[in-house]
Length: 411
Image (cartoon, rainbow, N blue to C red; front, side, top):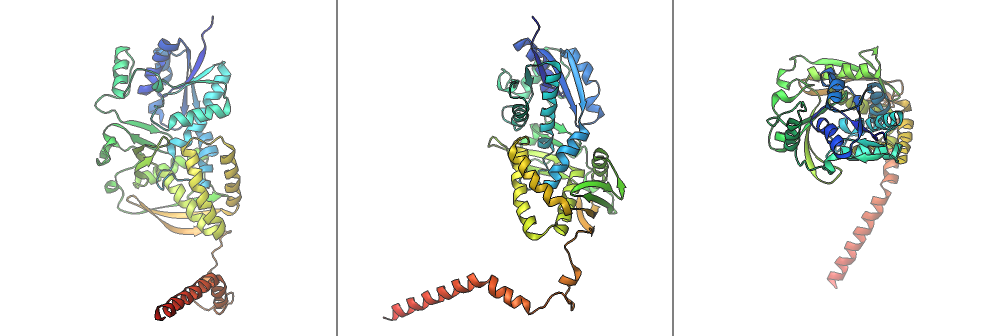
């Protein structure tokens, strides 16, 4: 009888390297490894197929999904303005739905009955992966070893790997984990679990230290069409090329570092260090262009929606009717978000140096302090009287009550 197949989200890191062998011992599965190229770099992808096969996988799929990730997930997120808890640009969270989608596609292709992942029982990723699978193929079984096996820590995993001759990329001396894709890189665990400890200078990969950044500012201009970034410094680029280029520009100017104690979906707080250089530029520039082109009421309402949108991405709710409905609203708001924003970058800081858009609602003749023909100063009096009418009535009632109390006191 043929073995059942399971598709494992395989990174070649400590957890998934151990999981291949564990799935064989525990379930006797025929293991199909799937690695998603989300922009983690050639170094992390090199030798993965050979390693997975040597560890026990029968098939290996290395899927380049960078274009899909940026075009169909990251850019819609930028349009939405989603930022989790004011700081986190959702680099890990936004990549999980498309990885989950690819796991389901590979499972269908090879006839697998199950999906497996290496997310821990304390983290957010288990929810994100599994919600994607449930939304796209709820008949697939999901195996989450961290919720089943006897291994209780990363140290246990390292020992397991050593006992089974499994090559691993980390050691017990430096066990903090990293997750990298084209949008960002995150660091957590190990020495970083002490929130009072500053990260080591040599930990960062995408950004230089602000002290080592150039002594002269650098200018960069980003062009948008309907909220989608399309140009850098006047040159049209593909989605992947554009993010890569902005990562280089922002990174050499030390822009994009975040140190955050965040609220996980399961309720606990965790400390994460994030580098999102190009994403920081895009998020900032897009917001500035919206301020320049979207009317007040729509902009303010969209800001409240962005908080919910960010939560949904963080919680793994990408493939939901509500997220899709919210994005319908977002797309409508982006019809006029076309133009360019110029930014000045200097030693970890960024500021707006220029704005251009044919859809701008900024009207110089309307806001000038000089004489103009569009606005009558005296008209403001009627506006203030009407808009402030509730305050006037409330003030009159308060004064009447105070007067009545004074009369009562006299008597």
